[in-house]
Structures are given as structure tokens and as C-alpha cells.
Image (cartoon, one colour):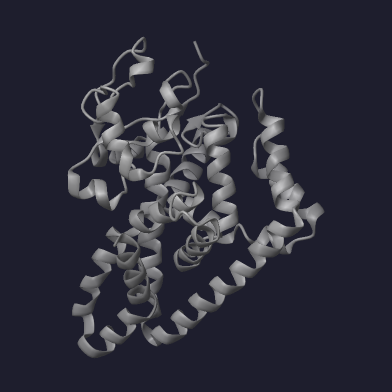
Length: 310
């Protein structure tokens, strides 16, 4: 059902809204609201595909997830690799956009942070396939500049990213998917005609949502917190829309669980409400889960100074 809804919303975003704007004028812009609201559902389906939970068939799982990524404008191989690395090396120095380590002026760190928070994460995913068109040596140099080698596993992380960016099969798939994405969005912008800013605006709004949601579960999270992530409270309606993204710490602790099982698993393991510390981590101080959207606004406090692990 969610897949059908997201596919319909994608078709409306790319082509249907242009037709409705011509027929009904500005009133058709009301459709922008559900399209943007469904952004976490669109990403959530891709996320399930990344963890091989979308379909039982491996080929169908990857094909559908890859096409959903094209519709969202992001490269599937790159976001899959980045997400799995994020699970393996959560909150390592390369994965701490909310922390200021004292290198360079604070104003620059704040500028980079807010740019990333307000759509920069999505924008970086859109342009990431350019690495696949560069000579491998140039792509490797760009990775070394972008991915920090700090910390005990920094060099290992950097090496994994370089290997990914220079792998011939992945480069080929990334180029193919990006060309398909350019064709789809190029056709969409042409179809919109003079109304092309509407499509661009929808992309910007969806990009902000993706970037905010990506940063939220790990914002200001200490390295000694369980799963190095947090859970949140969320009304039931939004739980479905976000595909239980509010239980992100639980997802990090059990990444192979399908999204539909997370609330039940939380209850079965006697978690406080549906977001406090897991039974295995009862020695840690209990943290009352904050409301999801209130926590999202907290991110605008800006980056904090990095503190050593006690």
C-alpha cells in the first residue's frame, strides 16, 4: 500500500502536478503538501530495500529500491553504501556533522552545519554520482578530502570509501542510474515549462525534510549512549508516515528487523514507552524519549563542541 502511494505521489510530483497547474492554476499547489509529507515514506521504502526487507526476492528488492531512488533523485548504490557504513561506524569522527572539534573558525563550522541541515545532505547525495564519472585517481582524492581519517578507525573508513568510489561495477551502475535520473528529471522540468520553479521548490522542500531527518537521531548523541542514537515519541499516524524512523536507536541495535516489527519488539523487551533504554542497557541512565518534532527543532541550536568520551 505504501509503495503504491509513494509511486503515485512521485508521478504526480514529476508530471501530474504540471498538468493540474495548467488546468486549475495555483489551487493545484495544495498537492505539494502530501507530496512533501510522504518524503520520509519514500526514503523509508528505499531504506527497507537497503536492508533487503522490501521484498523476499533479492532481485525484486534491489530493482524496486533502485527505481525508488531514481524517483527521489538519489543514487541507490551510494546511499546504500553510505547507510551501511553509517551503521558500522556510527558517530565516528567522519559521522559527526553536529560537533565542532575546534578546527577552523566557529562561524565556518556553523555555516557548513546549517547548510547541511537545510538540504545539504540531500544535495550531496544528488551530486555524489559525479565521482563515478571522474578518473579513479581524481575520485580517490576527492574522497580523501571529504572523509575524515581522524579517530581509531578513520583510515579504515576512508579506505572503504575510496574502494567504493573506485570499484568498476559500482561506478558503472552509478553512472547508469544517474543518467536515468537526469533523463527523468530533465523530462519533468521540460514538461513543467514555465512552471519549473514549482518542481524545483518541491525538490528543495523534500531535500530539507530528508536532511533534517538524517541528522535528527544522532544530534548531540554521546559515544557512550546505547546504539549511539536515540528514539523519540511520535503519534501513530506519523509512525506510519516515517516508517517508525522515530525508533532509530532500536533500529541501530537490530538493523535486520523490518520497520513493522520495531514497536512490538520495543514492547516485548520492556522498553519504557516505545523509546527508552533497552533491557540490555538498563545499567545506563534512562532517558525519557523526546517528542520527534520538538527534537527536530532542537537541531537548530547548531553544532556543539566535541567532548572526549568519559
